[in-house]
Every structure is written in structure tokens, then in C-alpha cells.
Amino acid sequence: MILIKYSVTVISVVWIHIASCVASESPMPQVMYQWNIIEYEWPNDTVKQAKTASGEYIPNNSAINGIKLYKDKVFVTVPRLRPGVPSTLNVLVNVTSPKMTSSNMTSSNVTSPNMTSSSMTLSNVTLLRPYPNWEMQTLWNCDALQRVQSMEVDPHAGHMWIVDTGYRESMSNVSTVPKDACPPKIIIFDINSHSIAHKYTFPLDVTGVGRFYLNDIVLGFENGAARYAYISDTLAYKLVVYDYKTDLSWAYTHPNMVADAAYKNLTIGNETTTIITGINGIALSPDYQYLYYSSVAGVGLHQIKTSVLISARGDNAKFAAAVRTIGTKVSPGDGMAYGSNHNLYYSALGENGIYKWDVRKDLGSAAGSFDSIEMKTHAEFVSDARMQWVDTLAIDGAGFLWFTTSRLNKLFSEGGVQHHEPNFYIWKVYVGDTNYMTVARPTLGAGSTSSSILMICLSVIFAACLL
Ligand SMILES: *[C@@H]1O[C@H](CO)[C@@H](O)[C@H](O)[C@H]1NC(C)=O
Ligand SMILES: *[C@@H]1O[C@H](CO)[C@@H](O)[C@H](O)[C@H]1NC(C)=O
Ligand SMILES: *[C@@H]1O[C@H](CO)[C@@H](O)[C@H](O)[C@H]1NC(C)=O
Ligand SMILES: *[C@@H]1O[C@H](CO)[C@@H](O)[C@H](O)[C@H]1NC(C)=O
Ligand SMILES: *[C@@H]1O[C@H](CO)[C@@H](O)[C@H](O)[C@H]1NC(C)=O
Ligand SMILES: *[C@@H]1O[C@H](CO)[C@@H](O)[C@H](O)[C@H]1NC(C)=O
Ligand SMILES: *[C@@H]1O[C@H](CO)[C@@H](O)[C@H](O)[C@H]1NC(C)=O
Ligand SMILES: *[C@@H]1O[C@H](CO)[C@@H](O)[C@H](O)[C@H]1NC(C)=O
Ligand SMILES: *[C@@H]1O[C@H](CO)[C@@H](O)[C@H](O)[C@H]1NC(C)=O
Ligand SMILES: CC(=O)N[C@H]1CO[C@H](CO)[C@@H](O)[C@@H]1O
Image (cartoon, rainbow, N blue to C red; front, side, top):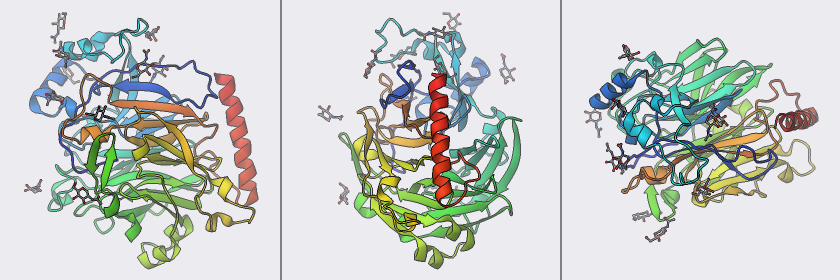
């Protein structure tokens, strides 16, 4: 997620691995990684020092936002919201020698606030390794990644769909058009063969002119393969559709995608931040039939059938006739995730946590009632004082919901984040669910329900055996 008003960005290092031995069925969220300031894996010290001297690396300006999982890999994004972010897409790597943190300053500052515990040592640090490599992070090379907020991993094909919104010094600088910057694009990256499977650059009539920011992505499957990408444009207030099969894209806009003026002042703790961000978190049902979305500045949860998104080809009138506001979230939020067992999880920024909507509870007995469903039974799922700005949510294949907390409220406030305390966390919590793409080729109707349940049972048993 992004904000426009910000002042100081401070980030720093270190993870601690906490409580990995907690029973997997525990609903208690676990801190998997935490950092005061983000640290990257550099080729060597010479490169790091040169990039620091040139201003290509400004440690205070990196914040982890996006997260996605594939097998045992944890991918994270650091959107280039400010200058000095050396790598926008990364995979986490554990490094055991402090020397490998590549600078004496960071290794001596690899501390956590409660380093007093004797079990904590300075020797295990998690670094961000540029993904797929350093070359692909080169600014102003439009073949490389410029500014990545989100990606989605197709677990069947092992393809990562990377949304690159392109680079301009200021995201809100409407006078800068892509002719003097890299335009927005999608790169479909084959994780297993470590190669680019496809690249698509958006045409200017879909996205890329004036104020825009491609933010979140979900994938729609057809005949067992990922075909459609649905992408939120948080600053142009659009929903973008990309069709992989025909290599075409189109977009919709609607008044419920904007930043609602009533929710532009967001207060977390003692700090109030002004937000102008609209449609952001999006989620897709496991039959790929219904898309859900919300604005950051706003509390409405909206639903639209993907059949309309696909067939209406950018016709806003058809979109408006089909979209429904189905509920009111407890507070403005950022990311969302929908599980294969029909649970929708959403970030609740004002509550320092995540709310859960068990969609089945509100379905009623009528068949096909997704078309009339309303969100009534949502309830707090997790909350913690350290969960400041729950940013991006991702469900893995083993029953866990993972999420990042990016503390953007601190990042964008006058005081900024402080180096002596953790600012960025990666959490996971057992949900007994798998992500919405678990069944690539769902059968429609009642069958999809039972096959989803079967998949959940199998994955729960599998997860239990592993742990
Ligand atoms: C980074 O932020 C910290 C805390 O606000 C500040 O003390 C420090 O001077 C900043 N560093 C740079 C290089 O701006
Ligand atoms: C550091 O890494 C860069 C990039 O890989 C390489 O060109 C350079 O030779 C390396 N320098 C040293 C001193 O190892
Ligand atoms: C890092 O180490 C911790 C503790 O052993 C482990 O749980 C985690 O999966 C590791 N992460 C990566 C990315 O290897
Ligand atoms: C880091 O510290 C070691 C040991 O104190 C020293 O030999 C080395 O020169 C230092 N490296 C840098 C880049 O300052
Ligand atoms: C670290 O600090 C957090 C609170 O900031 C606390 O919940 C946790 O138990 C501490 N861990 C250790 C190992 O002391
Ligand atoms: C650090 O990592 C090594 C290798 O994975 C492991 O043996 C050791 O127990 C870890 N230390 C801590 C404090 O987690
Ligand atoms: C916007 O971009 C134009 C063209 O690059 C530049 O001249 C101008 O200073 C920028 N304005 C702001 C507010 O960043
Ligand atoms: C937001 O804060 C500004 C500045 O304090 C104030 O003028 C404005 O009325 C507030 N807006 C709302 C909707 O509360
Ligand atoms: C809010 O500010 C008060 C007074 O400065 C302070 O005591 C309190 O800890 C702050 N609360 C948070 C959540 O930062
Ligand atoms: C060796 C070194 O650079 N240590 C620094 C660690 O961080 C503290 C607080 O930010 C600095 O005061 C030290 O100089």
C-alpha cells in the first residue's frame, strides 16, 4: 500500500525468529521476521559503499510492503516510494555470519529491542536478496523492474505475475508522463526455470498517464490456467483487467473506487496521517467468479462478478450496473485475502489487526446467494499493538495466513520511524485454509464447495504431518 504524504522514512535491519515451535494449529500470530532497518544482500562492500555515496541507496527509505509465498520461498517487495531503494523485488535469505551483512555499521547494529535474551545472537540475520537478480533492479532500464508494489504467484505453474507500475520521482506528479519514464507493465516470471515467460506493457489508454499507481493483483483461472489479472490502481481509482490469452487490457472506474473524503484522516495510535489512496486491497473467490475490493480511505466492501469484468471490456455503465457494496468494514484497511474455504481476511488499520469474514455464515440457504450476500458476521481475528499498518496478506499452501506490517503511519509522520525499535514485521498465523488458487479448475455450483472442503482437509492433515 502507499501513501502520498510522508516525511521521514527510517528502516533498519534484523530479524529474530520467534516461536517457530508453537503448535501449528495455534491461532496465535507468530512473528517470523522483524527488522529495525531493512538490509540487502550486496555483491560486496564496494558496491554498497558506492551506491550509498551516489544516493542510490538511502537506508531510511526502504519499507517492506508486499509478500507472497512459493514453496519455501518468501518474496517481499520494497516499492520505490522514495529515492534510494536499491531493490524493489526480493526473496528472503538467512545469513549466519555477521560479516556477510557486508558493513561493520550494520553488523554492529544488528540488534533487536530485546536482545537481552541469551538465545538471541548476532549471527543469524535475514537479508533481502534482489529477485531475480541485481540487474533486474536497474532504474531507468524499462526492461528491468522499476517500482513493484505487488505480485501474485500462480502455485500450479510456478509463475510470479509481477506488477511494475513504472518509475517517476513522484507518484503524484501528474505532469510527468511515461514518455520520460518507464511505463507500467506486467512481467510473468517462471520461478522454476528462472526466466521471463512473458512481458506486457500497458497502453496509455488503460493506465500510465497522470496520477496512477498499480497496487494489488489477483489471478483469475480458466480451464486450469491463470488467464486474467485483476489489478487495483490506487491513485487513478481504477480496476484494471489484463487478459494473458489475448494480451489485451482494459479498465473500469467507479465512484466507490476513490478516496472517501470522510476517511482521509487516518489515526493510528497518536498519529494522524492524511491518505488520498483509493481502491487497493482486492480478493478473489476460489471459483474465480467474484472479485472484492475496498479503498484505503473508505470502509465499503464492494463485490463485482468477474464475468462482467471480462465481458464489459471497460464499459463503466455495465460495471456500475453490476457492482454491489456488500458491507462496511470496521475501519479503513489495506490488503485483503480470500481463502479456498470461503474466508475473507482484511487489514483493519485503525484496529492494529485483521478482521475475518466467514463468508459461508452469511450465505444463507438459498443457492447462488453470492449474488445477494452481505457481509454481516465479520469479527476481529488478530490484533496486536505491534501490528501497525497491516499491509499485505497472503495465504500459503499449508494452512497459514502470512502478512506484513509496514508501519507506514510512522514512516509518513513527522517523527519517522526510529532505528532502535522494530519497524517491519512478517507474521504468520494458522487459519486452516489455503489460498483461493488452490483449485485451478473448480467445478461450479455445489461441487466447488465440497471439493474445496476436501482440499482444505487434505492440506490441514498435510500441514499437521509436517509440523
Ligand atoms: C534516518 O532516520 C533516523 C531517525 O529518524 C535519523 O536519525 C537519521 O539521521 C536518518 N538517516 C539519514 C541518512 O537520513
Ligand atoms: C563487487 O561486485 C561487483 C558487481 O558484481 C564487481 O563488479 C566487483 O568487481 C566486485 N568488487 C570486488 C572488490 O569484489
Ligand atoms: C530462516 O531461519 C529460520 C529459523 O531457522 C527459519 O524458520 C526460516 O524459515 C528461515 N528463512 C529462510 C528464508 O530461509
Ligand atoms: C570491519 O571490521 C573489521 C574488523 O574490525 C576490519 O578489519 C574491517 O576493515 C572493517 N571493514 C570496514 C569496511 O570498515
Ligand atoms: C521481545 O519483545 C516483545 C515485545 O516487544 C515481547 O512480546 C517478546 O516476548 C520479547 N521476546 C523475548 C525473547 O524477550
Ligand atoms: C543460527 O543459524 C544456525 C544455522 O541455521 C543454527 O544452527 C543456530 O541455532 C541459529 N542460532 C540462533 C540463535 O537462532
Ligand atoms: C514533476 O515532474 C516534472 C518533469 O519531470 C518536474 O519538472 C517537476 O519539478 C516535478 N514536480 C514535482 C512536484 O515533483
Ligand atoms: C482532517 O484533518 C484536517 C486537519 O486537521 C481537518 O481540517 C479536516 O476537517 C479533517 N477531516 C475530517 C473528515 O475529519
Ligand atoms: C501517545 O502519546 C502519549 C503521550 O505522549 C504516550 O504516553 C503514549 O504512549 C502514546 N501512545 C502511543 C500508542 O504511541
Ligand atoms: C558502529 C556503529 O555505527 N554503531 C552505531 C549503531 O547505531 C547507533 C544508534 O543508531 C549509533 O549511535 C552507533 O554509532
